[in-house]
Length: 76
Length: 204
Image (cartoon, rainbow over all chains, first blue to last red):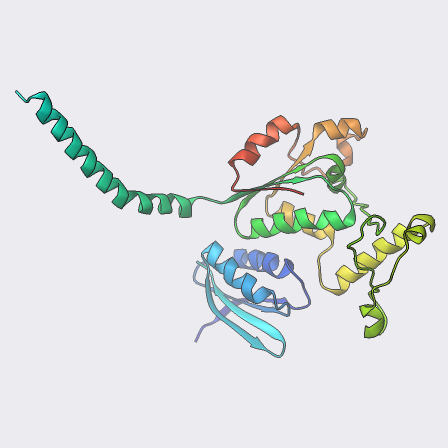
């Protein structure tokens, strides 16, 4: 069971805001901690995967529920 | 004492061995250098209308979020994007690809692309104000950040903003009219070496 250190609600925001807010939220947590991001922008599914790959953080999971997308990111 | 022929033979063997070792080691070494390097981007922003204000700030803020080093050079009308208050407007006149849709009302009304004759766009006073208002509202409805917000996020992420000194002089601006975060007022000569070293360079 993963515990979430920080939550970010990026619903209603469009590209590139979900990624920019995710970057800011990641800066608030420590290495190994988990950030949970909720977004309503379908484009953020692919963007979040690339963001994590490029920044070296680990995308633990990426799920869709009730027209929103939930991402768990572990800070490197 | 070794003969010349023996020496040549030794050298050839050494070269062959070196070639083989380099082939083995170089790809890994180059990959290491590539992955440990911080990517960089340079943007030359030359346009000051509302529709053209978005791309440079969206790309710069996103690159900064990816951890890239970003430098922006604002020249000609792009310089207006560095003013304390961005009063960028948009004109559908001479902008034939711009969809003219309404950001309010029932869906069939919003989906309708209004035909706008040039005569109307050129002749009706205040048309640009209306078009600008509609674009801002559309963007807000869709959850897109305002230009000011994107610029703020760029600055927060340490994007370097550089102004073209020549344009400042030509347009009769004063340096105090610009945001204090402008790192430098320089010419193309100073910016091009920065652009040359960057991995991505865009002229917008």
